[in-house]
Length: 96
Image (cartoon, rainbow, N blue to C red):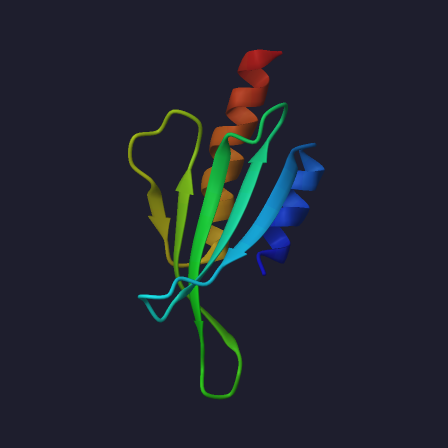
């Protein structure tokens, strides 16, 4: 899941950890991808379900970068990658 996002993070030299959560009270499963340069303080939370044919259906992608109060919600992985490209590469050029 999120293959293009993982490739993007590797290309800009960010590390990541992934975990799966299966909540008991809601039908959606949750996939959490924590990433960062030195500390993994950014996260992507994907709420997904399975269709009757067994395919994964992504319902919501929430991105919370370091010190953001509210997550940014996306429907598609491509939109999220555009957002991350804009914000993470800008941050990297400011830090150097």
